[in-house]
Image 1 (cartoon, rainbow, N blue to C red):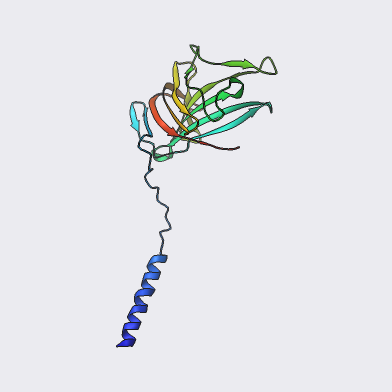
Image 2: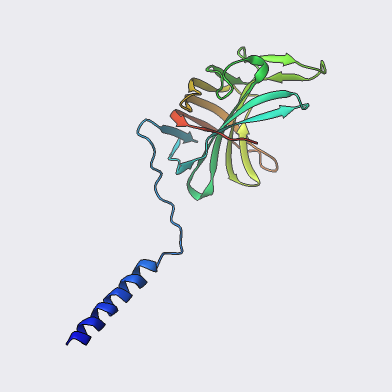
Length: 199
């Protein structure tokens, strides 16, 4: 009886060890645990999209080896591996915090009265702050904001200490060749977390 009990205990322990060591090989995408105050509303051709996850960051760039910029990207993954991106560029010559962008509207098209430009070095080289929108269906099917039509990215809040940004956007977008169809996007984002990414 004692041996039978001992065998049963070993059998149970062996099965527990086997069960504990079995792990699923498939990595499942967990729902994104967003902070309560972080949100985004995105409408593409009047259809509402819910981002699955975000990759928001601020990185430094350089032109002519000396002219430095701050480049912010809000990138979100949508269903079917589609992506939507908002980018904002500021230049260090403009001042401001090194890990944030200016709170202001960035307007597309000929009616932009908010753009800040400066010729540095070569008189023909003008460096302007600005923004862009991209909707990426696949590697060869990409829409970008159309400079010929009025639209904007309006940054309404940026806290470089906490790494949070809010704003809204709207624009007509045109597909890059060989496609050339258009679509309209609009939406807003609130308290989007972002992180500094070194080059």
